[in-house]
Length: 129
Image (cartoon, rainbow, N blue to C red; front, side, top):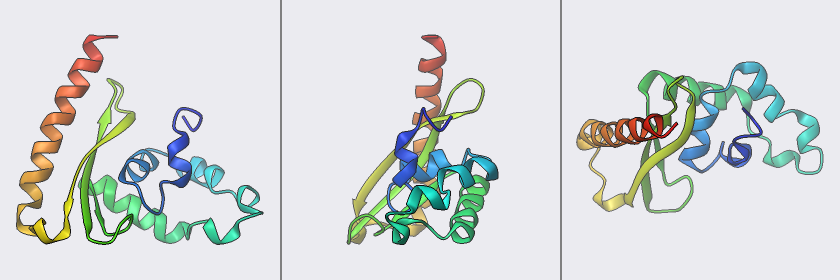
């Protein structure tokens, strides 16, 4: 799993796709990805695993992730996972917008649209295999 998703290694702090893929990992796999020895030369880049696990738990519960200015000031993004027929997250599907255009009251409708598109992609992927 980890070798298939090298983007997850830096996804904890910015990209939705990283968080969406990290949410599929077990605690043991997460510990392996963020093992202290991997960050020996750059300890300040290692995430707070307690905080990350809390965020991943929320993502698993909600089924989507929201990036409010984490990767770029003024940018909001919402994303959902795209899964294979076994339920493993293969990718993330997201939409981004300027923060001034984001309306939190429309979040559920936006997530529903993304989920419908993700399910269509999943169907296409399963037809091709």
